[in-house]
Image (tube, rainbow, N blue to C red; front, side, top):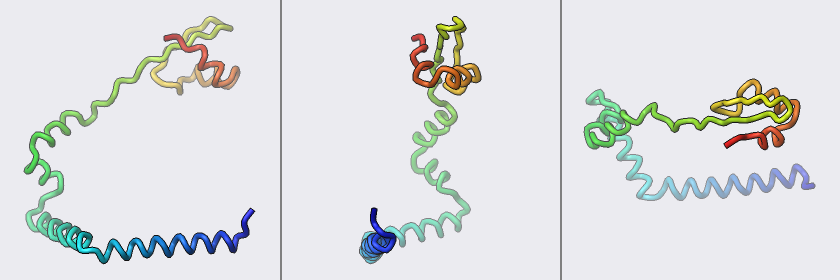
Length: 119
């Protein structure tokens, strides 16, 4: 087990290394150009009372239309069916958080109940 003082010294070394990396990035011409572009873009958006979403819609209408259509459409949840061999009770659920399944898991254990799944 390492001492707390040693742990602090290690962490301070990591902080110094990360600070050095931050300084390297913030002093690079690429970073300065990105920040300047971002600032000018934000200023321009404010000047015309537009949002980033407005710009995306303007520049890529197909992409924005696809996002609008696909929003809210999620993956259909697969029904899970379990049969309790002790009571012969069958439970169908869309997820594992169904009340009867929780009770079975408390009584017989999670791995046991998982083995009762019917495909």
